[in-house]
Length: 80
Image (cartoon, rainbow, N blue to C red; front, side, top):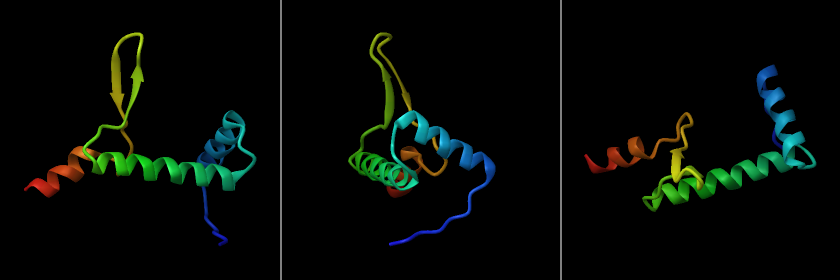
């Protein structure tokens, strides 16, 4: 399937940075990897898990904070 999207300069800069830092061959690979990660994260959330970055040395974690990605809001709606 072919997908066409519009992206602003900031988004294009982010995509190019991801391409360079990840070593992925192109935008298709970046999109597929991002979709795989989002799918995994949402499945983890649905199982009641927190998605976080862990600093093992400091024994601390930081919960992922992205627009539209807040397990507390999603789960609290179901409990009311």
